[in-house]
Amino acid sequence: MKGIILHGGHGTRLRPLTHTGPKQLLPIANKPMSEYCLESLRNAGITEIAIVIGGVGANKVHDYYESGEKFNVKITYIEQDSPKGIAHAIGLCKNFIGNEKFLVFLGDNIIQKDINDYVTKFKNSTSDAQLLLCEVDNPSQFGIAEIENGKLKKITEKPKTPPTNLAVTGIYFLSPLIFDIIEKLEPSWRNELEIADALQMLIQNGKKIDYDIITDFWKDTGTPEDILLANKTILEKITSTIDGKIENQDYISGNILLGKNSIIKKDVKITGPVVIGKNCVIEDNARIGPYTSIGDNSHLSKCNIENTIVMSNCIVKSNIIIRNSIISYNSSILHQDGKNKEMIFLLGEGTKIIF
Image (cartoon, rainbow, N blue to C red; front, side):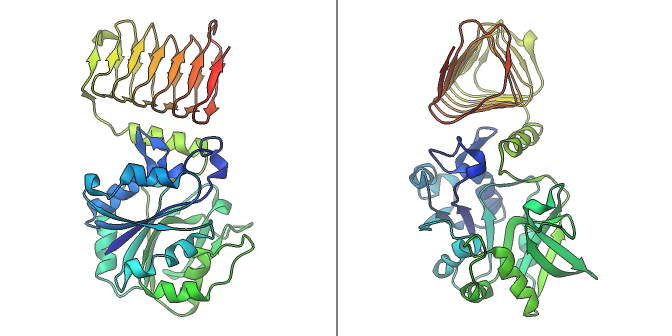
């Protein structure tokens, strides 16, 4: 089997984080969210992977994944000139797939459960497609599946009045038959070729579609709140690895990942789970955690940070209290007299706040 990771789209709900790059490269626990997709594919034995790119910062995807060699996979890049829908993006991969069954991951989907059993099931089946469904609290935001007598009856894209709360996750097991279906699709009201319409056409044509309902954590990380929840969930599973220096263990609790050449000064309190990248300095009575990720080459002092993502190359020097925030790459917050004010930030790349 081959794999596809869809890495396009505008990420409008995540602006300003996505003004300078694709949302799928935004880090969760210091790792781009699409890398979790790639790892799921690789760990299931799928090592030939197409990444469909397009939009702002597509070159950054090339720069990060390159040929795929450092991830022990082989990557082919396929360009989508504009966001014309998931089905359109899949259709661009027809030549790459050939006559094999394949697996599609939306690059902003995070799943905690490995997919090995699902891959084996689909390989050994005569099904034309296989879907993973998950119960959600906001079904009007997803493609929704209706099941009758153990069979998929209907799939509707973002229904105003959802008939169930079973969302079709962004993980699709497909056969080459889908390419013939995609060629027959008409654009939706969004002027996109909808994967829900393609799957519904398979159902109407009497094709066999299997499904499984997953109960492990799955998240379509389309909003800042989704990203912070995914970050929290992944951090809850980490175990401590200390590759840097901690000057005073008495102020450290919970699980911590500390990168090489990073230093936590003696007056700093860390409450895990927390991940801190390489070449970081945490000092001057800072309080970090829980549920906080700090990227490489960042310098934090005086601040009190919880349930927050601070990306690489950031500076926070203030006695400000930061909660439920995302601070993008190369940003800085410098505050001479924070007076312990509690703030929530959503900062795009390169933001500088001095007050």
